[in-house]
Length: 444
Image 1 (cartoon, rainbow, N blue to C red):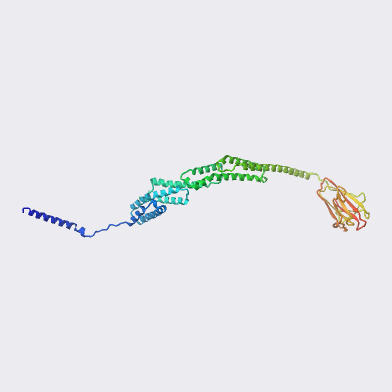
Image 2: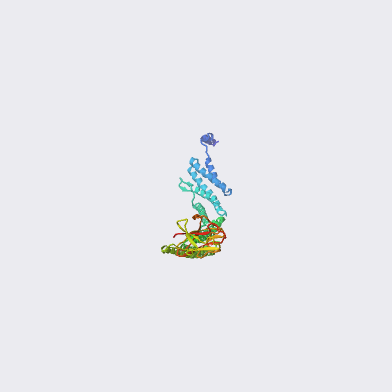
């Protein structure tokens, strides 16, 4: 009974404490929350893309995803959809997740036996794009350390490949030094890894030796062919060219071992020697002809100043078988035969000339066509078989100079005397026409 008041006091105190507690937390339990937590969907989308890179899903997927993420980074930054710090964080995550996959795919292409320049172009474009990614107020590169070394290595391999492709195009010979340098580079590129994985490049580099060797041989052969034009060259020019070509052949012999499947120079040497011999004979013959021509010209020059014989015409009619007559032209002296009506007879006259290169006179016969006719001989009396000219079968009764037959003596020597014989033969029984022979001889 003694503890009842104490128990009552304790109970009252407990009730008061519980009531106070309820009153203290009642607003928190009954009243609604003043704010609702929000989720940034743009940030979630960006994180989802950055974390989706996966080597097993293939190169096309990862390259496409890279472009999507880069575009989102640029757009979200411009539109302030996410904070600057979040952009930096996701950019670093992008580089960290994507670059190992990109580097592996790139190196796998270098291990293949077939390389494509379109792949190289895409790699370089991607590397250039990656290097544009900046963080911390656009002042710090996102690519550094081993990643940067790997990208540099990819760029170096592509540059080496391009240089090797240019070297593989070498086909023309310029000089022995140039050829040796180009062949050395071609052989060197074939040994560089991973370039030597590209079979097409290795094959093209292997052809450089042969291509330059063929060009070298063909250039020397073209020079040798020029020797065939020796007739259009001066003798000194030909022999100078031959010496140059001989040196070129010797030069080719000295370096041809560095070419593949090279052609020996024997054919070139034989061809050059053939033209050399032909030219020698030609120049020798030409010199002889020039010497003869010079002598002829000198003789002609001497002849110009040599006193020329005066033209001479001396007529012999002392035997009375021919007599003078009235001439149909003032430029000519006329003579006629005197054996008219004398069957089987001949009338002969002669005259000499000197100082002429050519000489012309006229003859005519008027009798039976094949019986009575005139014969002309030079430096000898004419016969039925040997004569210079004849009127046989061509009698003329007209008396004008147009009825006469021209006798033209050519290629005469001025300093020589020629004797011309004129014979009228009377063979027919009948006396037809005037039955005579006629001669017109010019004055000097």
